[in-house]
View 1 (tube, rainbow, N blue to C red):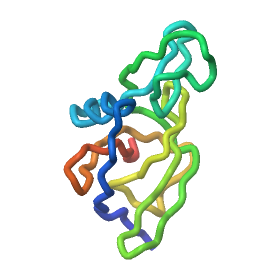
View 2 (view 1 turned 120 degrees about the vertical axis):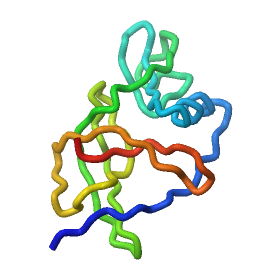
View 3 (view 1 turned 135 degrees about the vertical axis):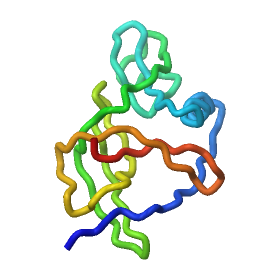
View 4 (view 1 turned 180 degrees about the horizontal axis):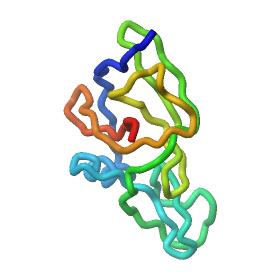
Length: 131
């Protein structure tokens, strides 16, 4: 039986000074990730301190918006939805939702691309859909 992911409106985020640039960029249709300026290593979520190396300044850079499904789970609530970890082309994994798809057709390793859905308060939230 085929089941399509329905339009679920997520709650809005509560930005703080360390996440404000991320949410502002999302509003402009960009997904920012952190990159250590010295090593070039990427991380998500972006934060002011590199979680892997205490040397090197962290810069926020736009992600390509491409990735693959690393793992996922179908939440069979009144409005079914898919929660997943997507491995970005740049390397980090992001917890997100997979939207606009036939849930039964999803597979680990499947290519996905970035889309933005609006939260309850109108904030753009990064999600993914099959590529």
